[in-house]
Image 1 (cartoon, rainbow, N blue to C red):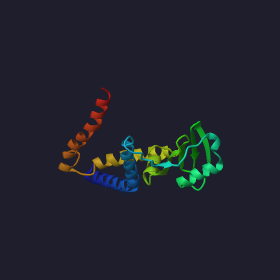
Image 2 (image 1 turned 135 degrees about the vertical axis):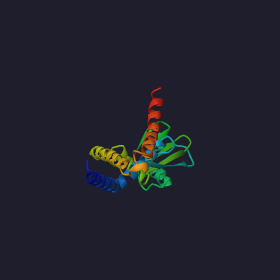
Image 3 (image 1 turned 120 degrees about the horizontal axis):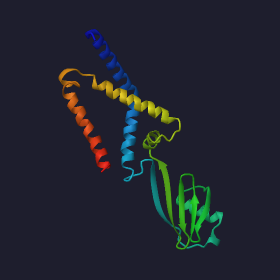
Image 4 (image 1 turned 45 degrees about the horizontal axis):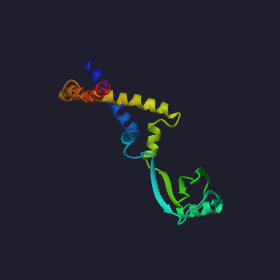
Length: 189
């Protein structure tokens, strides 16, 4: 191949690498944030913020005492203007459901556990994409994965000489393969 053709291919490779990198930058950051969040799912809830409060209603109740008016009083003490429905998980409990919250009242001692959830900003949305929770998104995700391969391979051939793939690049690329290979080997032991 002539020097002119090689230079032309290098220019096309550089343009492809640059433009795909710019185009997918937002999605790369979104997947990275989501990946970090999902890696630590045992440490915190990456999708929802859960707020819990203990309440004391000052007296005990029986199932026969529970009416819509009493449920409305419980709801008001929890800071909820109205309830959707309620049920009795046991003879000593009533559970009240709200739009994004629940209140579980222990009828015997008149205490309650109020739990309100809200979507964690940014993380909820990027996790929906990362988990492919939107049915058609799997195709966008597959295209994105393919483009990450193109961006990576085109990046391998960006530099020439001592800093390129024929120089220190081969050692760095080989070194970068060690962590995933080690993880695979350890997992299969």
